[in-house]
Amino acid sequence: MPPNSRHRMLATVLTTAAGLTLASPLPAHAHADAGRGAPAGSCDPAAVLGRMTDAEKVGQMVMAITHDGPDGMPDEQTRRSIQELNIGSVITSEPRTPELAARYSNQVQRWAAGTRLGLPLLVSGDFEFGTTHNVREGTTPLPNAMGLGAARDPQHARAAAVITAAEARAMGFHWNYAPVADVNTNPRNPIIGVRSFGEDTGLVSRLTQAQVRAYRAAGVVATPKHFPGHGDTEHDSHLGLPTVAYDRATLDRVHLPPFRAAIDAGADAIMTAHVVVKAVDPTLPATLSPKVLTGLLRGELGYRGLIVTDGMDMDAIDENWGTREATVMAVKAGADVIMSTGEYATHVDAVGALLDAVRSGELPRTRVDESVRRVLELKCKYGAFQRRYVSPRAAEKVAGNAAFQRRALEMGVAATTLVRNDGGVLPFDRRARERTLVAGVVQTEQLARAVDAVAAGPVTSWQAATTDPTDAEIAEAVRRARDADRVLVATYSSKTLPEGQAELVRALQATGKPVAALATGLPYDIESYPDVRAYVASYATTARTQRVDMTMHRAAAEVVFGRQPGGRLPVSIAGLYPYGHGLRY
Image 1 (cartoon, rainbow, N blue to C red):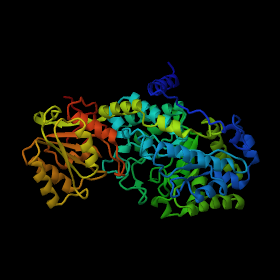
Image 2 (image 1 turned 135 degrees about the vertical axis):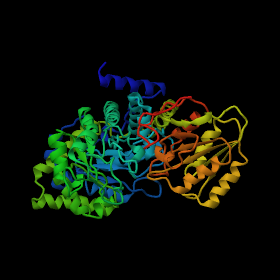
Image 3 (image 1 turned 90 degrees about the horizontal axis):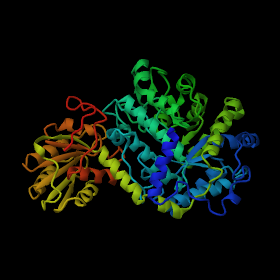
């Protein structure tokens, strides 16, 4: 069976189980309101391009973050971005529910329909672990990429993409900034971490390719990122400019293969990294480097799709070049779409800088036309002209439905990794009326709720005020442990585990109660408390700890209380456990 047929079959199975269709029907008014310049059902990029002014063209090359009013809907500045700046695509802020997200998408599309040419927007989201990444209520939380790497099965990666695509399209989104194709070779990477499938190039390549194909078949633009690789950095590009010093052979052998696999799978968009890759360009970050974007990506790798930058207000770019200069530099380097994620003034600057560069001759019109044609072709290919509006009621029905939730939990259990279990500490007996203390530093109450759902006995929770517990806090946790029969202590790190957490684990183990440690972020935490007798990794929490992944908390609770874990380490834990290690009960 051809790959696309398999993906469509998977989509059909998942959506049929939920009683759903992947694409919601258009409202009755959609065809009449689809835009004067490109009627619904027709799509001719060359004809549209021929009618566009310079201002309309450069507007299509800017993707702007939206801003909200008190009602949670897009505000007047967002309308101005669309109707006065001719913005071609948006990334929404964070609409709270699927119903609101659908109404939100419809509103920005109505504003776009009111422009001279009436071109539809590409509506995008950062949905790395499902649409819950941005739409927090009523959607399906999915494992982070490292969890899918631990599960090892491309079928899980494909299913995650299909569920994300179904929910995204129902809410009016066409474009997802996933999968993460970075190979996380640096355990101290502060920003990629569990967002990566793992440290093995082959694994990352296979799962990246599987997700790109699944997204394309399900009707959503996949965007492998961050080219040519953000996995070996020690600095967060949101806060500074990272540099990687490995040689060209390492780049070719370790970091480029996932992007080659994505291109082979037909990726229609690729996102740039705000990282200086010295082996290619020792001076400029990839986003601004002709050597990286035109020379390497388009020239050597033969990529012909759309190149989108990462957020240009990130400090790696903004603090060094500023919006106007960096915007023009990125397009001259080879980028097609500039991601403008700041205030309205930054959208004005981005569009204005491009327009000035065109009028001065700094940017040739032929170069601009190349990028605008790619944007228009993407809108045609992914149905933005034909399916401009969505049904809020259908969005509520699709997102977070029971079939998707069940499938997500299966993935979560397959991802959860039992790393150590000396003396048979685990599993805890779910039928015993024993008292369980859940202690931790982030999301402890949510984890305790997941434990309470599977344990017959009473469950209490305790959480430190920060991620580095004080001696007094540790003493309080120990006091509470004395009233419990068993303890689940959750640690969290996005880079290096704070010493207070390691001391918390040691102190709780010293009580003599059965203690299991659960790493809810990076799986390397056991390096700091190697004597713990039972250790589980769930890969649940990224550096943005405000994201609550109840799927992975439920999966971890199920495993701690006896469900067979499926995960194997997608990274090595230096000196302790090799890549691929994972125990079973």
